[in-house]
Length: 303
Image (cartoon, rainbow, N blue to C red; front, side, top):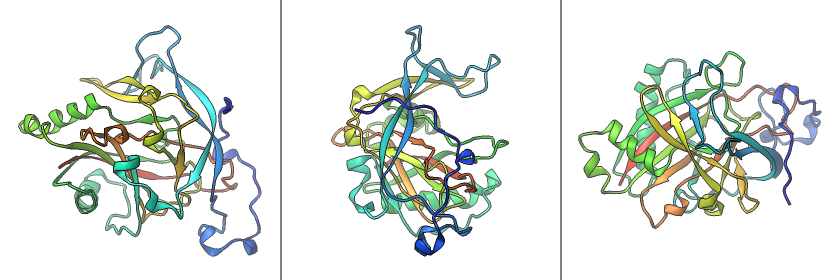
């Protein structure tokens, strides 16, 4: 039986010794010669713990004057997380709500200017989704987030199991971004898919873990009010269930993409239309490994 675990040690505090390079294959070390953690790992993940007063769970997008961003807590559990490396073809968006892509080129390298990202990187992501998502006829990218691990970063990796969107918030997104067409678009198939990639791969610290959506029960998901200054959206927190199967893609490179499906209106794959995910502290991360930097672009996919 899985037991609760203590909060994980930050990557920069880990003191594990690296194996000698003579015993490592070239592809298993990063450019600095540090070994890339591979294979099955057991690590603590942060799951949902309900508000102590029994109230409806909520979190705020903007910092609050009292410093309290959400009214629910964390329940840490030690979880076995399998490596996707070598078994990538076993997982699809329709069956598992995530998929992986390799050898994806990009003409954007700096990721330092939002306007430049929208001008150069957005069209690449749009075309990638149109080319790879079965049935996709239209893609609308509505935002992106860059995460960096250094203390001054605006956004850091999120170490809490969650799903970015729900059925209600996805429909709300369609109405928000395409108000004149929403009534028509909502009668067809619509999805939200996040495109995630590292900016300084191979990823050594705080890799992204995903749960196979087919192993996640509806009862595991808790709807959470996501409070913006001008509106209220909805996300989902996730309760721990020992039947959930978790994966990560070891040593993810800049040319690789992880597709995360947050919602799918097609009821034939609806049960598998949402993927819990979280960054996690890999206990094998070698001392001196650089913090992970990444970008996720969020897309409405129609058709």
